[in-house]
Image (cartoon, rainbow, N blue to C red; front, top):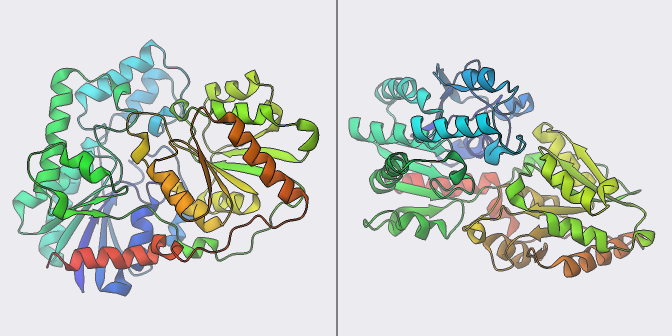
Length: 433
């Protein structure tokens, strides 16, 4: 068996989408000749925005997991600003930032580079070095975000004759909320230098959207295309091989996950406003996860807030149940300069749920291509309130008339399963030997 050391900050009991990529892949890797060994942070000291103890059950029973201490500033952050929780990605759990919020973001962007979890690195490097020596590690895989984890791989690559795979499953300096950290020129340059060195010195780069290959190539003059591998986020068949009871009394449009201000769902609110309410008496819109007050305000301003049911963050197994209990699924792409190349991780669980998908984002974007290529729904840009409203009405009418609007299993769906992705990853790992 090839031994792969997976270095990931997010691991159960951490919750959210980020933890699931390597939790699920490590669950199946041994089937394909790769023994995963995991290095993560001690959950008692970690800075997790959300917790999900249900994910502990997904840890492969025979996998070795090692944990280290860390040293991070988030407790001081919470005391200074009177916060009760760690900021979510895209600040989805924060209201419009005040002066102290902006100051905290400025400090984060200029004094903690690449991010505020960089305090874990010295502990992780020391433990990873020990594991490489004592366990005969062949390949090191570093997963980000947080992107500071990639600097661990950079350090280990210098110390040991190992192969290194950098899993960049989110953009680095191009993430849609990057400007919220108010980087000064020196900090922005340092961050970009770190990003460039990781791109250049890693042996393989994993990306979650094909166009990111060009995005990362633009950071360096060194050719990187040959070592860049597309490994999207995915879904675990085991999460869907259960009994779910669909709500037959309501036509539910479900959104699961973070809904930050940058997602700009006004067109969806406008589409709801255009519906003939007398003909859609059983319509309900369910948001499962973190929703900002500004988002709620868009629906209130259009007189459709009464349709909303907002469910706070739930454990992953319950989130899947909400997908299966609904009628239609809403996918929103955050609006920014790179929105066309974003593929949210939740899209694959949406596909596995086999419900029609309404995609709010670029109609020629990567997410729209996947959805429409698999006959799983339609994409609408932020000017298409009328067509979106008509599509909702069409689906509602079919549902009300008793027609089954659930989707058949697409033959291409299996390539997004975590087991098949583990197979794909094993081939990438073996190709480094």
